[in-house]
Image 1 (cartoon, rainbow, N blue to C red):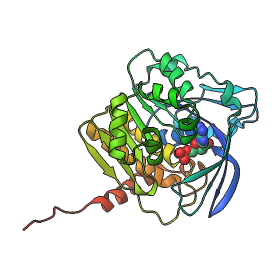
Image 2 (image 1 turned 90 degrees about the vertical axis):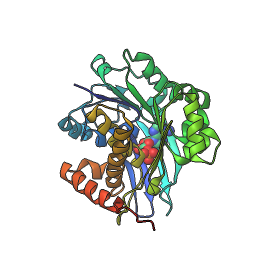
Image 3 (image 1 turned 30 degrees about the vertical axis):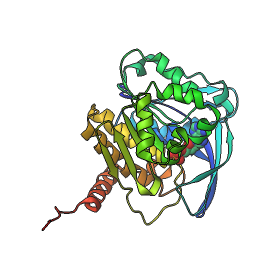
Image 4 (image 1 turned 60 degrees about the vertical axis):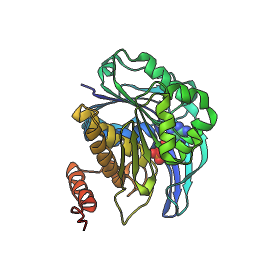
Length: 306
Ligand code: AMP
């Protein structure tokens, strides 16, 4: 049974980093998310692709209990994104966004997915994110992501959907752009005044900051030797984060912190290869090993004061 629903983009991405260049590789917020979340939860995915999309290329998801019947194949071309990174891999420069089939998309959540207790509204048009919330029939934990493209093009729709969700998961630059506050703590507080009770701020290689009504929590990113392509790291983080929450079935302060660590572990794999490749060939045991290495990096004995 589906316990985690994601709505977002499935894309063909063209990406350039200082370490290489790829064209029309599989990507999109919903796909990166699902690729990671499927290690922990039964995921149902709602997205649109065009007639040019090769469905066989995502066949591997079915072997990981992902239900893809919520993907509609529509007239037109699949969503495309083109981006470039310099040596500061924390900052993507968008060269081109082709909405294509997204422009006419009206996400329809299949009835079987409506029982999910965890919903991730991945990066997509905020009006479509609201349209998904309209279809929910029972209380669920709803988490939202977005991107500068929507902050700049659909700001009021974005604020409306933020008011309707439980948590916001965004990049630090996006939080600053939405709230017009430099301080992430102040920015998070401004968002909490709108409704969400927990804000998870992704800070690229500097890790994650979580702010809730009562707590602040920090997790570093795992220090890697090989970094090729950060595209999708945020969605992969969210996939590990929400997959963990859906698996445990709780949103206490402690499980949220554990989920942040799991999200960070998953994101650390994503950047080791282009597109979805690394997480596609990932094995569960590697997650366990990286988690152990991650935990070791964080451990220090109690400091002795004189
Ligand atoms: P991130 O995790 O933030 O690196 O997300 C990267 C993914 O977001 C890429 O695979 C893109 O296809 C997708 N993407 C880029 N721009 C947009 C947009 N405006 N709306 C939705 N998805 C997007």
